[in-house]
Image (cartoon, rainbow, N blue to C red; front, side, top):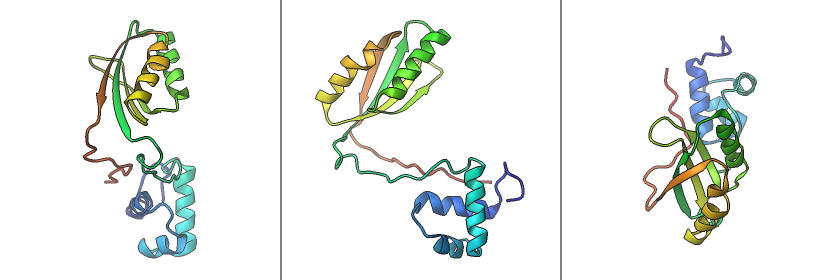
Length: 158
């Protein structure tokens, strides 16, 4: 990795393998990427140190852990001031049901991705958490009927 902010072909191979097999041993990773084990370890460490790899996680089956219902929620705020944005963002970060929260441009202010057990739990989340956040004027909920594609893997190109 000659430049700390650029990826070469070897870095891309490492990242692609690690995205799909995060628990692979250093020896296997080195072999798959045509590196010595020490060079592989050094490169992975540098990729972590330079922020290309931000962490490793186990991906759980939502059904088996009681989070079968996937919901997307559009949130419209009553005012778009820095204080309202920060209040909303802080509340979203604290809410354990919220998996992702994105400020967006367009017809609404935030898009939330949440997972809950069922519609009863979603109703509770909506009434006790989401609409009680100061500044929330309106929400629109979309329940997912079928997950066609869900991945954590980013395409690593040139």
